[in-house]
Image (cartoon, rainbow, N blue to C red; front, side):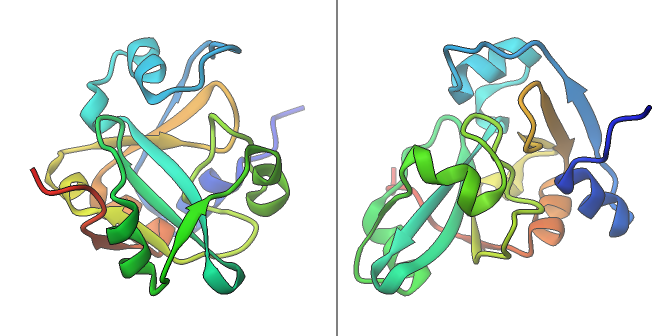
Length: 160
């Protein structure tokens, strides 16, 4: 019996977007972008992390940025239209998104949360994001990520 399609892959297929599925043996103890980049032999700046946040007034949203980036919480809050925000607790991820920590995808979540993709991402030829299933990531262009996630580009990191 064939595996059921992943939500993220089902969305990409329904939109007829181009992507590449990359399977790997996940590290059960290290879910970091640094470890993932090493496992799939991809530069860290093109290995993206998907962060789920909660703003004031119970508003959830998603930020996607390079594995080399650190989020500027004040910029993120402003972009999301919040006065303040914080990361969603790890225990809430699966219920909220349908995905577990370490494989969270900005595509195909249970609910279509506002999604903000750091502007630096658009300068890469391709990027890698979680698929929603441990051991599987998806390689695509930043434009494909933008369309499939329903996101928008925004400045999310401190100025250099």
